[in-house]
Amino acid sequence: MRDKLVAGNWKMNGNLASNQALLEALISALTPVPGVRCAVCVPFPYLAQAQQALRGSGIAWGAQDLCQFGDGAYTGGVSAAMLADFGCSCVIVGHSERRHVFGENDEVVALKFAQALKAGLVPVLCVGETLAERESGVTEAVVERQLDAVIGASGVATLTGAVVAYEPVWAIGTGKTATPDEAQAVHAFIRGRVSGLNPAVASGLLILYGGSVKAGNAARLFGMPDIDGGLIGGAALDAAEFAAIYRCAQQVT
Image (cartoon, rainbow, N blue to C red; front, side):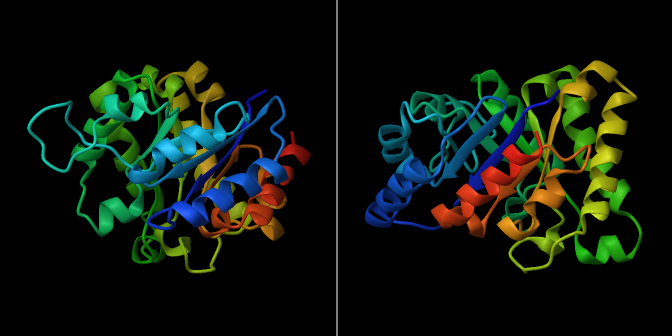
């Protein structure tokens, strides 16, 4: 049986004082158990704070992005090796905000994925369609293209050390959520696509759902056969809500 994973994405939020309060509240409210993993992905400047606060808590920490290049003359970049130096276990790669706001294409995302693996980090690869793409009936084609860019560059076997997060762009931060059946259909498509290349990798691949996940809908989403947890945005900034979502994952294992 696959583990469940609940990962928080703080996005560009927080400061030293509010972060400390949130981290302390998370540690108090959330007790990780075997088979249900937990992580928070924080902004770069606060990685040291997360490392100090969460060390030994059972809650892992990671970053929200990384540079597609290794160390060197890339002003403003943050390399995978730097993230590993702060004890990060994972890093989000190809989030829709990076793709659509910052203009990252599939090739750049694939390079970032490879850099994360090279440094021993777990890349959390985000895929998903816009509302226009869903209404045009091309959801599967978009997700397949995004997934295949990484598989083509790094090989399907590398997904063994990765996580895939399906995040429909139209459901991120909008309050709209794909129904459990809608989300399951895309998750099943992703697993089926990988299975066609390597059934063993597909069987063990964690596929998360992201898009306005809350305690009120998490149990139904996580109970679907191909949904292995969630990549949580706004609700990750509320310790009680995030802990409640984590408990939903426990209930369906």
